[in-house]
Image (cartoon, rainbow, N blue to C red; front, side):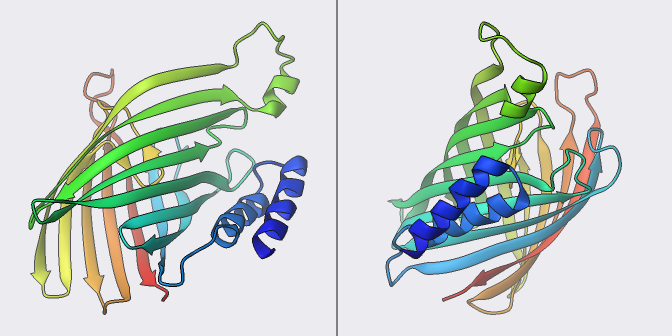
Length: 261
C-alpha cells in the first residue's frame, strides 16, 4: 500500500510538472518502496558531490547525486537522481537513472551483465533518453567493459506547445547504436586504500559517443565492510575526430558508499 500511495502521489505531481525536483524524489521513493524487496537483500547508497566546468557549462557547476541499490544474490537493481546548481535550464533536476544487472561466473570470476535507462532534460526544450546494455569483467588488476546504447533526443511537451509544431513535423532524433567501452587498471596503495585508472566513454549519468573518451582517476578508502569514501578526477576530451580534439572539460567528485543493512 505504501508503494501504491507514493506512486499515486507521484503521478499526480507529474501531471502538474513532470520534471520538478519534488516529482523526481517521489519517483525514486516509489521505485524503492513500491517494488517488493526480499528480506535478505543488501541495500546500499552511493552519494557524491561533483564540481567542474566544460565548454557547455558556461562556468563552474556543482552537482549532487544519490543512488540506491538493492542486491539479492547475483541480481541487483538501482535507482538514482542527479541535481545540478546553478539550474541553468530552470530546474535543478538533471537526470534519472534506473538499472538492473546480474553476475555470472566466468573462469572463477564475475561477469556482470546489465541494462540501464537514463533520462536527462538536455535543455529547457529538449530531453535525452538513453537505453544501454553493458557487460563488465574484472581480473586482479584489470577491468574491461563493453556495451551498446541507443539515444533519443526529443522536444518536450512544453516546447511542442511553445513552438506550435504541426503533427507532420518530426520532433525527435534517434541515434540507433553507440559503442560503450571501459578499460581500467587498479591496484592497492595501502591495505584499505586503492586506486583505479580508466579510459572510457561513459560514467555516472553520462554516455558519450565512442569517439569522445574520458580519463578517470579514482581513489577509494574502505573504513570497513559497510562504509567507504572515494574521490574521482575526470578529464574529458572533445573527441578524436571533432574540430576541437583537445580539452573539453574537467571535474572532481567526492562521495561515499554505505551498505545500509
